[in-house]
Length: 271
Image (cartoon, helix red, strand yellow):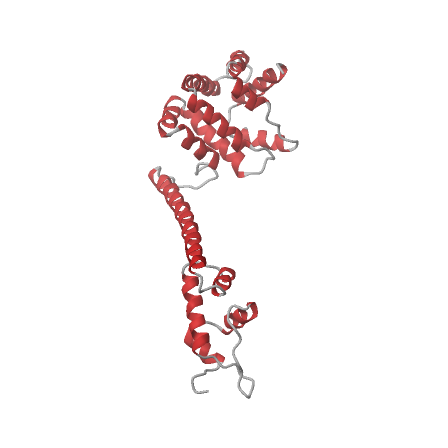
């Protein structure tokens, strides 16, 4: 058997390792070759070509399980085409993910973000809202209410980064889609947001807080779909609610927290 080599030479020739070859044999990816009279495995052209094919398929990004299935049906052009189409779609998704990561890094660089913290990157919910409303509306939002814009970015981050037991994402989506098709109501919400931002300059016991909370409830009542989204969404379970409120306290002022409590109280009292 002059055209056969032992496993040591096979490992070197294929640029693999003994562990890898044995594993391929174990899972049935590489057939176990015939043995010599002395019990040594002898590898020839068939095994070498098999290893070449495995290497090529791995270079395309296919996993071993997929490669094994494919090698069992190599003569079927339809199977091969389906594999390539599936792999192409997977790679395109990976490309999109990489492009999104590069865009985030470019944003950090453009903003001269010297320190990375938990609020440095926009949350998935905030990105989703931006996509629904459009860049122009988000820019208008940032210009009209810069303070509340920054606070909302942080609040969305707190909600997205941890598992609070509520599906906020769908509520955010529904609100964004509502305001996209109701520009007048969106403007009213922006105006209310501008007033809310000014609460940070008030003391916690300022009577204006209660007045504004009641007016905000009246505004919500004028938007039935928005009220339904807010009122019909289940609240957090304790002690999660206490934890959330403590984290939010680092973002909102005492007056804004007081407003939030009054707003929820007045809104629930109407049900």
